[in-house]
Each structure stands twice: as C-alpha cells, then as structure tokens.
Image 1 (cartoon, rainbow over the protein chains, first blue to last red):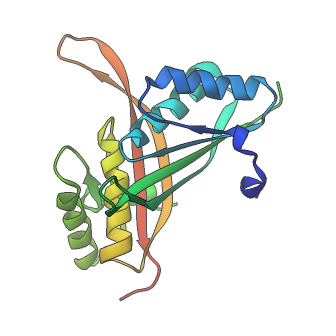
Image 2: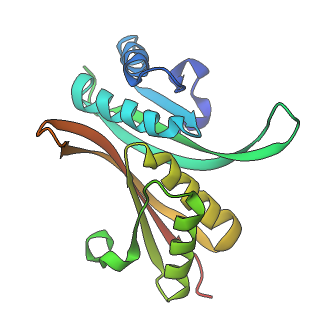
Length: 99
Length: 99
C-alpha cells in the first residue's frame, strides 16, 4: 500500500514519443535507487505504456515485476470547452530483489 | 483462479472496430448468463480494450468490476517471415452481484 506515498518523480507519463524514450526514463528511475516506478498514460498512449512496461521488464530490468495495473476514466475538457471521457492506465513496476 | 477454465465464448477479442462494437459484445455475453467476461487485445488495440472495459462498467453493466488485468508480450511472425514482439492485455470483468 505504498501507492499514495510515491513521489511524482517515481511516475513516468507516457505520451507520443517512441516507447524507448519512456523505457529509458523508467530504467533511469530504477537506477537512481527507486524500487517502484509507476507508468501512466491516457487515451491512445495506453498501448505505449504497456509496451514501455513490457520492454523494461523483459529486456532492461529483468528483476522488475508488475505489482499492480489500474485502469480508469478521466474527464477532460477540450479546446471548445466540451467535456469528454478518456481511459487511463497506471502500471506499477517493482523490483523483486535488490540489485 | 478460473482463468484457465473459461470457455472461449467468454472472451471478446478487441480489434479495429469502434469501441461500442466490443461493448455490445461484452454486454451481450453478460446478458446471456456469463458472470465473467475476458477482454483481450494486442498492439494498438490495447487502448480500445481499456475503453471497452471502462464503458461497459461505467455505463452498461454497472454491477461489473475489474477482477484482474494482465499484460504480456507475444511473438508474431509477419508476412515477410520476420518475428516481432507485440504487447497484449487481458482484462477480466466479473459481476459483483447476480442480477
């Protein structure tokens, strides 16, 4: 139950860059001593967040495992002032053993 | 631990159609008596699978909750015979109370 206490620096927001940009950010975060990193995304970037978690876990930080995956819906206001709903995801990766 | 026993008819594969097509399929599956439906997708359709789960749960089957979310990597062979990896997601929705 450490989710609430996690500092923002442990959170990587995935957007429209190539997945490897975010993988690098996650790996850097683990290497700086974090034992938990949360990957967040909304809308179409959700697929890329899953790619980021999988590539990190399978290729770069092989002692990381998926602790929790949450999905949700966020209401956003677009430029014309209209509300629309967008899906979101949060993937928490933790280390199984200290390096 | 009922995942393995679930019949394929309880699984909805999300592809490139509009999300509402898949929402309809999930709702139909619940209405036909299933108390668990698994939504699966790969690659870019992952975002749409999350949309499908969220729309179903928030608007149509409000007594459904997310039981489990799994992500993984699948190896696929493209037309030229090359292997490439693609991320996948499985979202299990279950009913909290019988209707």
